Image (tube, rainbow, N blue to C red; front, side):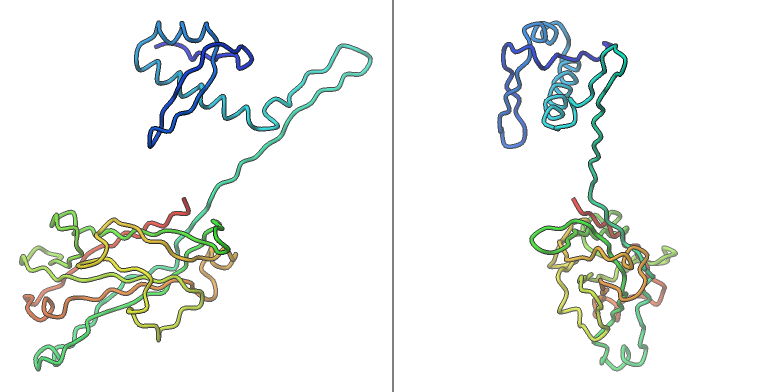
Amino acid sequence: QSAPVFFPPRRIGKKLQMFGTGRVSRTIFISEGSIMNIKQMGIDSKIRILMMIALSSSMLQSPYSMAAKDGELDSTSTGQVGVSLRTGHLVKISGLSDIDLPWDASAAADGTLTDVSGAIDYCVYTNKYEGNSYKYSMSVSSANAGDEKSGEFKLKSNQGNNSDLIGYNVYATGTLGVSQAIPFSAAHAAWGQGYNPSGSSANFGGDNKEAIINCKGAKNARMWVVANTSDVIGATPDSYEDTLTLMVSAD
């Protein structure tokens, strides 16, 4: 495997056009000798070299990348060292708990069962500040959606005793100090039948308060799970389960 090849940025020669998403071109100047090295190597090596060129060109934009300077031999000698740090976005979801949906046998028997739902409050910390507010995105995925290849959310027998499926929807909101009085109809996003499919993401407003990191004090997010009532009534008596994966991102 060829050793990495670095091209001196001060030797200006031919220019190379690089294309990214949307065919937006980027011109990078490299030396004549660098062009020869690219031509003499294979395609894989060429890709690695082009990536290194792009990296070195972006590094040159930093005011500290060229700050290192050795001292001269004398009675005193002074050198310089640039110090830089690039921080990134951070996000954390915490304070989660399992959701047990209620079963009302009498209401199911007399046909008055109209709501089979449960909710949890939790915390999402984000340090992404954009448009005068802290923001994050969250995707919700169902473990059973992959098994059923439907992209929807389904509860199924945890022991595989029957093939009945109970559909349900997921609703979520991000509001500091959420109240249990908030109905799922006030949610900022929804997943399930007629809504976003399993695995898709939606945007929310968050907080960067230190207490949110470990979910101490007021929580700033809520999730509802609402099962399809007709599916519940028609399902074989059994225990039905699914596992939701919540992935939050600040990028």
